[in-house]
Image (cartoon, rainbow, N blue to C red; front, side, top):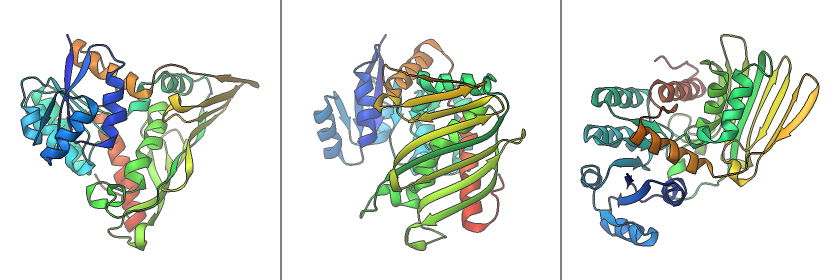
Length: 330
């Protein structure tokens, strides 16, 4: 059986996160795309060899020749269209961040349960063997008791007119766009839910109330006393890193985000140093294969439900503390 996927949003992210990996994953095809502009949808379909182009999102999610939906829309549209797809009986792969608010995230999780469907967050790096190895080393105790974690994701992305990444109303800002990754890496590896201790931001045009954040830093702690430092920024050179320090040693990873574009994994345990490499398909190929197996074979996936909600709650708490000095009550 081939899983026929429809894309909501003629977006750039879909080209590398769905269309390209679909060429490598058996049993998957990109069947359709929908956009608010019919001409844009048709041009996108023609460019990428997609059979059908729909002039609106609802027609796609109700189409008989679409088995599952990939939501590549801005975060403020994730909740409404993910819920609509679930109500239409379609499994959903939704881009991160999962939603714009924790209330939206709760509604999405509730809809998944109510309709008995699958709503998977596109935390693509989770499904790569490098991430599995990271979780095994940390949660498995190879580093001993973890005392500290530092995680960072920065890019050099100056603001331009109309750029959605700088529009807070649709889910823009460094925290929502970038910070979701290091927060997820840390909490998924530690296997416990941290709490936010401190947070600071720099905002576009110094608009503390409404402006998108250019950079965010946060300190978190776990019930076991692990100190976590996370930072993200739009005005720094590219860097995606995470380091775990434990009682038996440390683990350093460069580019857990997209190991297929080059990575470095080094560790020291009980005085012995080592390094590892993880060649093979991209994070997006692994993610799409996991989504296919979940839909067709009921295979379990980690990035869904309460797990996605937990990341959203952390981001909301960081944003609230940085902007108002008050911890987000959820």
